[in-house]
Length: 387
Image 1 (cartoon, rainbow, N blue to C red):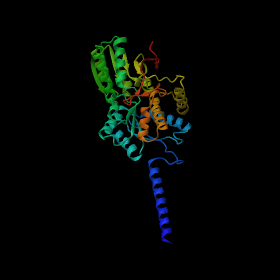
Image 2 (cartoon, rainbow, N blue to C red; image 1 turned 60 degrees about the horizontal axis):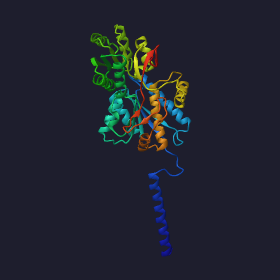
Image 3 (tube, rainbow, N blue to C red; image 1 turned 90 degrees about the horizontal axis):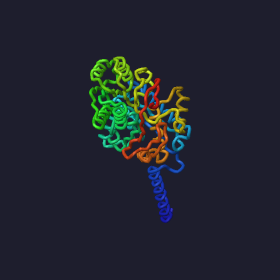
Image 4 (cartoon, one colour; image 1 turned 120 degrees about the horizontal axis):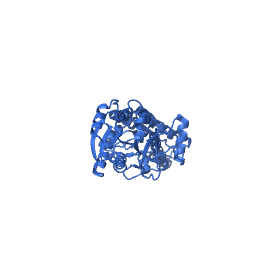
């Protein structure tokens, strides 16, 4: 081979190598045209066992209905949406481990989690970690205040205690004309946050006085010692809230002690188990509620209810609607921006008036879903409008 031919051959080889290298580099920076688009996988850290498993099952159902609907409609980017579950047991330490597994092992770009006792510690861990994960953390079924302030990656879509409790305090003071309140609440971040906000509003804004305040363990079934103190305090109204079997037991024992003061509570009173276990003790109680109405005729609610009843053969509830909403919002963000954590983050920040069974939701600058709230009453074992 002549020197001239060898020289030209060498130039061709170098050009081919450069072209190949450029293709590899460009392929690493973006998706090649015609290549399969990346699927969206969402992590779910919810209580599948333990003291809160009953409500955790409601959370799981909401996610499953959302995934079923999304995939029936073509998924995201033509790829099916997938969910990876980890059991938190509604325990802080277990919840953090579940989150770490979803992020470090499963490499999900977004995690949905429920309950204040888990969401608050995870958000704090994200903050202390300096946002090193770069994963969207979407909290729901948690009302603890200021959770989204921990990190730019923390979002929430749920009624918060700093919204619920002042509404309850105002109702107690202005509508029920109460001046003395007893406060009895579940001993976790949700309960303590709600009780603090109620006291702040009832005393600071409306001039009332909280004459008794005590927390109870979520597993407690016997509340008679606290009930005696409530009766001795002679309140005009009782702020009583929580979830799990301990909550309806507290309501029953308050009424069994002959205490007739009206009860005001948070939206958890509307849970099917709370109402069925409390029975007549819940009759006449007042509670905050989102605009969720399973009989609403808007398309978002109707589709959710249709799929839920067809799949589970049971009435719908706002807890399932909350996790359904979070799943649908993450998918919507991924459709608009992409499936990486940063793209989902940016997509969620752009959400405005997103239609859902809980009303049209907008994510504000603090990454909080803005929920309208209203007062309801328990009548004949059901949540009804005020008379």
